[in-house]
Image (cartoon, rainbow, N blue to C red; front, side, top):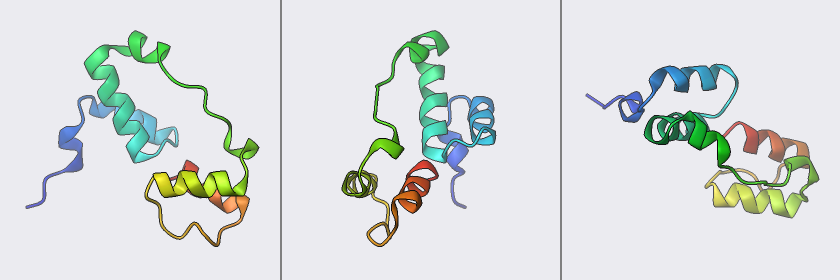
Length: 88
């Protein structure tokens, strides 16, 4: 029987809340596990200042999709790329 992916989650309730807010599975798991390990205050202080997807060029968006291992991004428009990146 395959193991449930939620077994590796340290805070399943926070994970579900983040998913309900529209975050991706990967992002929700990363945040919920970080909060469980380091505490919400510590996690809230960290974070980068990445450029908004709308401000990036199509080649930059394609490079990001490639970094994330996404498929089918080469023929997409800028808006389609942004949608793909936000919902992966």
